[in-house]
Picture 1 (cartoon, rainbow, N blue to C red):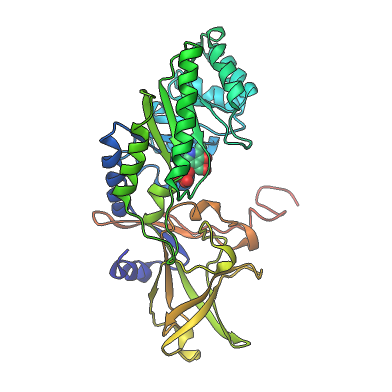
Picture 2: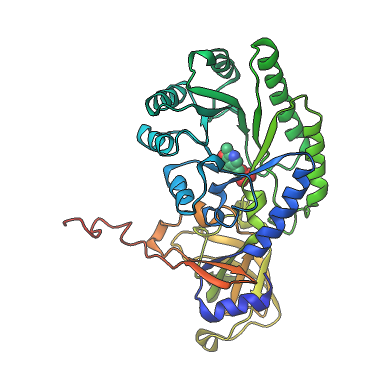
Amino acid sequence: MKQQELELILKEYQTPAYVFDLDALTRRVQRISACLKKSGIDLCYAMKANPFLTGALEPLVERFEVCSPGEFRICEKEGLPMERLVISGVNKERKDIFRMIEENQGRGIFTVESMQHFRLLSECAREAKVKLKLLVRITSGNQFGVDYELARQIFREQDLYPELSLQGIQYYSGTQKKKLSVLEKELQMLDAFCREVQEELGVAVSELEYGPGLFVPYFQSEQEEHLEELLEELTALIGRMDFAGKITLEMGRFLAAECGSYLTRIVDRKENGGQIYGIVDGGIHQLNYFGQTMAMKLPFVQHISCEHKAAQECAPAKGEEKWNLCGSLCTTADVIVKQYPLTDGKVGDVLVFERTGAYSVTEGISLFLSRDLPKVLFYSQKEGIRLVRDKIETDSINSAVAEGFAV
Ligand SMILES: Cc1ncc(COP(=O)(O)O)c(C=O)c1O
């Protein structure tokens, strides 16, 4: 985001805060979608990356991947139609699944994560008297999905389950993948499986829902992306597959990361053993850069110089200095970045950590130390700045003397 807009936000709102630039989100997703559309590929937003963006993405993607009852309720609140949801993830509980199926007359698509899961979906579909669309999730060697053998069995026995309609497969093997060769191998493997199911079992596989886990450069040392080139290469790989059905790419980070900024203020500065430490009012519980080991890599940060009461008591630093930027948690682990070069950094200044639109808002250990959950703001040129979640105190969540419970 531009400094001017950030300064406007800081006039009205305190830190720490997340700001999601909806114009930037729209621009990025439209660029991605335009590349995919040329090859007839659809886009699915894995909403776990940032559930706040779900409504804003409604006009921009075809589908939403939903992995918990809570995520489902967010979709309901946003008014998303069931037919655009892929209900994915492990531990689908009967009561939740049945409600989703019954209230929506079997619309939407559900992933199969195990044999028990498959039977549960079958029972719920029968009880609700609907035909349910399924994708069999193929495991990538972990607790998710089923292995090829079980997937084959499910496809082979599908006639025994007339209430279920197997549409195809889902596959996701991890995030921040840099090498296209990894994606190529996965696509070849999935292609071979679909071919085998069609040729040997005589069962049509009409859909492939694939999460490529595309890489987002978070640090200054990483190569900047060339979005169109990257997607051209990916769609070329997909184009080489025999599979002729519908392909949907499930993406989280690649869509959401760029539009997010995390604003945190320097609240203290000290020198310990010749090292400069800047304490900020946020921390690692609210900021999540994938691959930030030992806080050694430099993320993209805007430095906004601010006049602040505390700054007058603390001599302002001059010139460029290397700061160890630490958060407000009581743990030595709360180091956001070591040796960050700040010019004339001082108490009261605000640091804007960029590319924080994916996973930071939800994946951090945000309840640790009972600090407040930050505000969430939306920005767009048309609507300006909009507070979509105020700060939330967490002491009642973390306390045995919570409201409504007798002591
Ligand atoms: C099944 C599935 N699809 C898609 C994604 C999104 O991954 P990414 O954020 O790397 O795009 C995830 C993330 O965990 C996932 O579990």
